[in-house]
Image 1 (cartoon, one colour):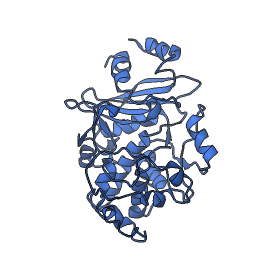
Image 2 (cartoon, helix red, strand yellow):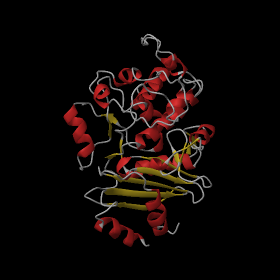
Image 3 (cartoon, one colour):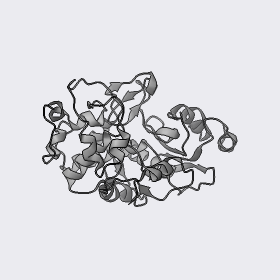
Length: 330
């Protein structure tokens, strides 16, 4: 498949590719593909949904490198000494940062408490009310978008910086990416529009009333941004000769720590990043609507794909490997 054929495929698609806005590919430091559709340009931003989680994993590594967090084994409650734990709750004291990063933290809810958390004044503290439970630490994988909000609170309290400031100063700007601003509204109507509106967004990050970023979703980025973040991972945490994140942490982050079930394509999971294959060094930060950072260490390539809201699209790994990589002779 040629680049022209790939463009036409996406342009004329009425199926899974019909919501793709941008594809950007970097190979060994060089841009080898940059295309866009649906009225988008290269520098336009999209809500990349759960790819945001992958960025939070990178920020965790930065906080560790700074010495603000001692270890991923550090207890979550170390960072919330002023939080009043409910009587009889013991499990919450055993939850570590590693549990948050691997989605093995336990919660006292069968489904995510979106209304309770997203209508509160402080989303981090509201989610802490659900951390723990009578079952204890089981090690069971439980995908919890709102649970990552607690990680944002940990990072902010550990570093003394807002996550958005840490991201701008230690990640986005050093990579030559645009500075992000807080979205600034969190009404029910605004949240709906944020997900459903198909127009390009500002370089923003959704936030709660306290100015804390939404850690599980809500980062707005271009495919170029995503590819550049993927390039950082591929290069072991170094960009243009400057170390941004330690190589050791990135190895931990992308290690296959858990084997997931059918819902997640039987992929493995590290620290909020996926390992699609057991025997290949391919990593991905994946979000709904097909947003993705794809990193292939064997081919030395990083791919960013963005897409507007479209239900039931999750994994673009197969699309990238069967359509995008052949178009760039990779």
